[in-house]
Image (spheres, each protein chain N blue to C red):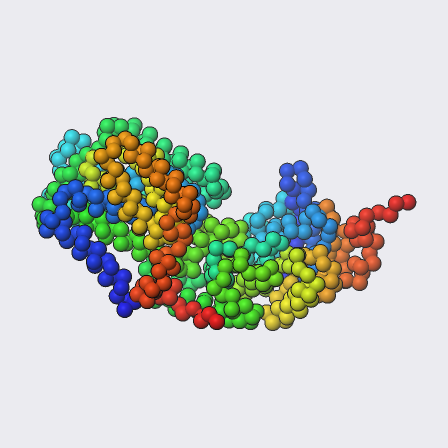
Length: 255
Length: 348
């Protein structure tokens, strides 16, 4: 069954074509990689899916909902969690608060409850706190709950961010270069972590990554784009040997 | 003990401010300064919600104070007092004790509707650009009032003294001060509850990283409207009280100077610290009064003091901490709002 369906997505920034005719169908429980040289428009595709940019053309359907024209918070509330290329945790709030605020769309109480600290708020916030704490424990991050993200090591911040993206109980998890800035040891851990998340939370993972080790290790399918155009699509083995991909990454051979 | 500590503090403050004023222990001037302190605390706490917690830079908060001041005064004077503006009173003065709080609330509502002029642009712009818009709103307020001749235009509006007198004729207690006290406690209570709830922390998330907030399902537009409407509504109520405390208002009372005073109090106390706001509003109001004998020179002395303060403590007196963070023993008495809401996991 298809979870996310993108058809002929095109985005112009003024005269610049950032993404052109991008089509992709993600099936439930699949892991798909999106790769391409720097500036190819990979993150832009994520941003369009999340509603940060409005596509010039094309349709995006998630679970039967049309995403084009919705606000980002509405889109992510439907069940799309994402992380960012440059970690975007809230640095002045504790790790626990980072997770709890991501519950925003699941809060059951209203504004007046927040003004007067009603019982309804207490019950709901206790539940949210327990849920967030459980999630931290699953990721073995509970000892950092009170810390400010800025003070944590890079690898831990990455894990907290992935953890936060799972708070909204996503069906689709968008990971934007999760291995950026990691050393080999951390990368191996990250691969295990993503595989574990995929099984534990039953999410479909769509990942942008430059580390081929990560991409080849976890993806069922890979899509390659360059200058906004799709240049190849297929299984890891097909991509590895595709001449156009090698050309895009390594340049043309001098005759 | 934790449940009782806060009400106890409120009761003590009530006992040392309102009760002696009622018994006539404090002179009229002291009572006036006490009212100014209460009003300034309300204003500072409300502005702190926008500038401190939400991280926007509002430099025109006085416009909303003024909107509340004018609306409440006009309603009261129209209904309750004989004045040059509207002629005879229309309702028996006995009703004044009931009409007064209603007009305060209406003033607050007017100010919070007025704040939509800033809240809507804030969806698309922020930082310096939004600051310009708040400044523009402050100018709009002043020009509009100056051009309505019916309420005195630039010459100002008065008659609130008659309203206060009407209330005191019914029962002789310091009505305005009591309402200042109530509004002050109410605003601290509401703002504190809001910013310690998960919903309200969405406002802090906007300050830290708005895009991340939006993508983590926080309805940023809704939270911005809530923050602006709440903060400006409270400022409007404080304005209504201010008008009745001073009994003469003109458009320049609610212009850049007043906005600047509020900003100074917020930054003096520390952005995102409610106890800091309370402390700085008290200190600043007293400082301004103490410097009165210096005449115009106080506007030289006070800024110099602030330059020194910013050199020595760049993030204000309290930074973004609360009193209980600085003096941990206080936590025994005043558990954080956090603790009152939910248990938090034990640290190891």
